[in-house]
Image (cartoon, rainbow over all chains, first blue to last red; front, side, top):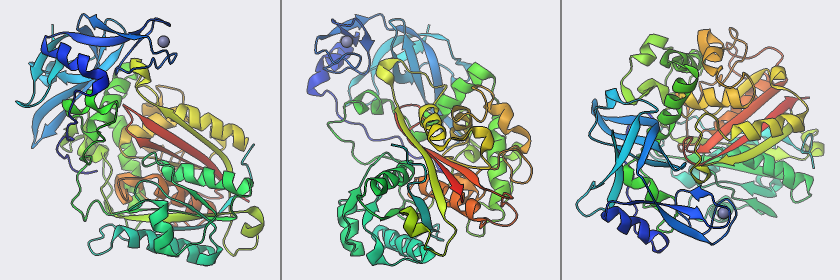
Length: 133
Length: 387
Ligand SMILES: [Zn+2]
């Protein structure tokens, strides 16, 4: 695995189970799922709770605030490309995203971030990305 | 049911090629199968069980059983990426113990390098529930190991120099392997000064990309006893998965934290008893995490454990990947599990390169991580012994 290759192709959200997530992103709202039986949140969103298999899982709008759990910037032709991160939300779940509008050299684990909503491609979905606060 | 002593590895073969411009994937599988049979002193008609994973072409075992003209009564196509052959050896031992087969063939092969393949996935499964929440952000495989390295550095103070020692050790071994892709020993400075790929991982923290493959043959004890080659006993096995855990992500450990203890318990040995370790080395961090999770050192001490050449045969306390590993020798089909088993077999037979052969090597481990370290992966661990 000596060479950096292009990023993987994208699937085409929305899927039927999670369409609400993507339409919420278009109105700049971040959703996770929370179980009405065991009370636990989860991410990525499913139709059954991965903690207890209950189907009483409801969408929950979250603050979009969190902190960087870990991150890495992929180099392209010697220049920093996009920065992948795991962001731990205040509400307790961690999700994969990009850190944008920031010098990758200035980032650190534990740094507070907040969600912003943008398309990375003209014909792509609106995505929850994160910027340092 | 314990698998300890229920089956033996009686044949092993690593394809010598590292670039298969003119050899198809099916033919590579056939060539490694033939090599392992010749090594074992068996013939094709002796095989009654066949194991392969997602690297096999077509419909997997169904296609390869036909191509090879096998007549089997047991097949297993467990697919979990690069660790699959390690699980296959354990599953073969189970099948033998259960009377489902007597002599099992396990093959792995591929030609990503000749095919000009990138690490780009094929068009993703539109029904995959997880990928829509990951792929739009463009994670490369390298990112998914680099984020583990970054978190390890943050939690435990691990350094790039310590990770570099893992590549240094592999390169010290690879210089004695005429088939290795990278045969020149490298220094810590050369590793940390190689181009950054996905920070904090450098180019020399990454494994090679190569074509080729390998095969092993697993047999019932009574059959192993009649064969000419030194028999390698399967003593313990464990497998486990770790993933996004519903959003409760913790990158400080891998599924080897579960597969390892299970394998050691079955074998009735401890990490301190192990003379040689084959550890999956897609990246340097993969090795470091496994060393901790398998119990060779406590969590967080991996950086100090690997420093100062501690993984170099004849020098340090735990010789590892004496063929040069995936970091320097071979990572066929982007899957390192088979070559991990094969080098452990060589060590236990006393057939490793003389400069790296561990004296009186009677107990070895082979452990692998298939999938991606930071997201979802399956670990397989086997403990092997010489009679
Ligand atoms: Zn629940």
